[in-house]
Amino acid sequence: MINKIYPSFFILLMLIMNLEKNDESERVVLLSIPSDIWYNRIYLIADKKSWMDYENFTVQIGDRGELVYNFPHWYHGKYDPALYNLDINGDTLEDVIIVLNNDKARIGKPLKDIHILNQIQDPYRRYEEAPIEPINLTMDRLVKIDQHGNIVIILADKKEYKIDLSKYNFSNPRDPYVSTDTIEYSIGNGTLKGKINAYVVRDNSVYGGILGHLIIDYFWDGKMYKAKSITFKQDERENN
Image 1: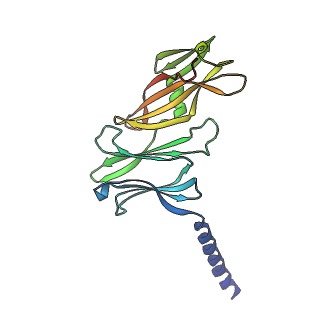
Image 2: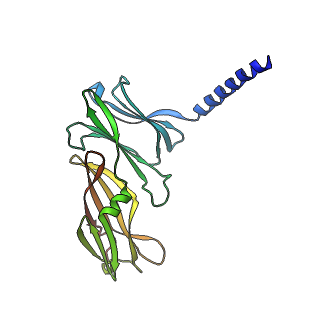
Image 3: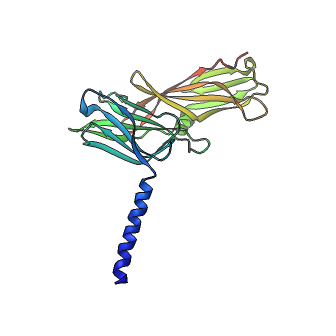
C-alpha cells in the first residue's frame, strides 16, 4: 500500500512546486505592433520574472495563434526593447526585428541582443530566425584602430580616418579602442544599422573619452546578415 501511495504523493508534491514556481512569473505582452488587418498584428510575449527581467519569449503574428514562434532562451532586462516589422533584406516581405537589452552580458560582450525573423513564402507565409554576424567578428574583419603620437588612425572598411587628440581636452590620452558592448541597432531606409562607440583612454584612469561612432550598414547575403559598409563619424563634444 505504501509503495502505491508514495509515487502519487511525489507527483502531487511536484505539481505543487511547479505551481509555486509559475506564480513567480507573469506572462505579459512586452511589445506589439498594431494593424487594421488582424493577421498582420505582431506581439512580443514573455515571462516577467521581475520589474526588469523577462525570459521565455514568444513572437506571435496574427490574432489566431497560427504563427507562433517560441524562444525559451531569449532574455531581456532593464531599459526598453524594440520591435520592428519592415523589409530589411530586399525581398519585399516584411521581417520581424527584435532588439533586447542584455545587462547580464559579460564585460566586452554586446549589451544589446538582436533577433531577426525573416519572412518566407513557400507557398504559405512563415518566419525563420536568421543569423547575424557577431559584432566582434565584424570588427576584426573590417576595422583597425591605432595611435601614433597625438594622432589616432581608424581604418574602417578600407577608408582611413585621422583624429588629432591635441584638439581634445584629455589629460593623458592613450590606447584607443572600439567598445562593442555599446552597440545600438536601428533601421533606416529599409537597412539594418549598428552604431558602436570609439574611445581613447583619456587620463591616468581607465575612463574613456569618446572619439566618435562607427556606423554599420547590414545586408542579407542569403545565409546571414553581414556588414556591407562601415563609416566613422567623429564626435565633437569633447573638443576644447
